[in-house]
Length: 117
Image (cartoon, rainbow, N blue to C red; front, side):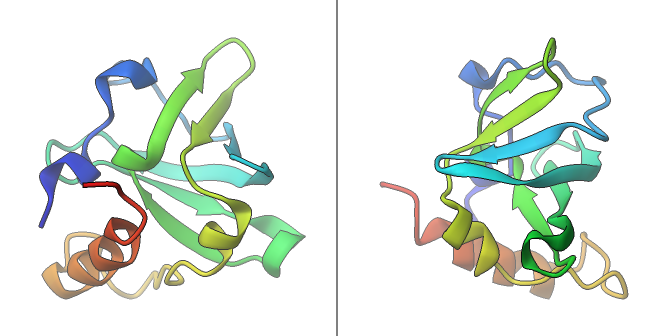
């Protein structure tokens, strides 16, 4: 697993301990929803995004490494993904823990396909 995927990019402007709940999430081509929950845990940081009615209320887990920038003044998180990439992401299963190694691996595999190595 690539730990950089599960950590905020230094250029994102994220400060550990900042509550991102309720922030809007913007993909490279438009809005994708709001942050429902987030984690700052080292090596496992993520945003749980409620896409709302945009794609019928699907919840998706976005690894913190997908965050390009955080605008605290406007309460907006920008991610390096398109709306289509978010739409096609594995749906978050609230019955599986985010710490579940199998689920973590599935999510990692999906997002690693979009990262330039």
